[in-house]
Image (tube, rainbow, N blue to C red; front, side, top):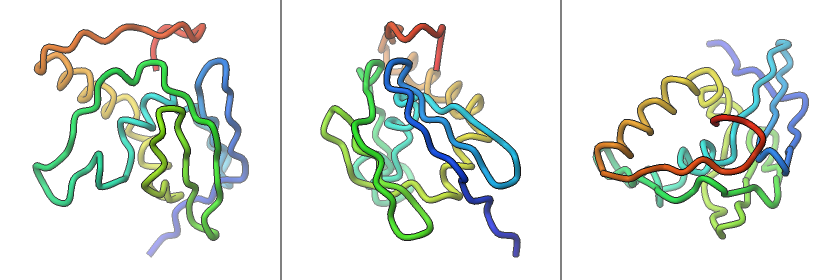
Length: 128
């Protein structure tokens, strides 16, 4: 069994609403706060079983207010919309990073199917 890479640095860029995560294998990712929020590992977002996921909308401008370490395996992210449940394990953060493009595309498709028109936040970047 291989061990998931461990972050060596986690840095919040508040203005651009990006969480930068560097790993001990040399990889580095920038994860938008909106992406992290709509991908929260909490039961509130993921549900309690298959098919119970909740589609979050209106999180374009969400930010992170605090990053709290949990043991040696995860962080709790506190968002400025009050959400703070769900632990982002090192493995889950890595999965979100590696599947960012795929997951984000699927999220945008679900928004479109639900009839929601996403508005781009003013972050200085074109998209999350």
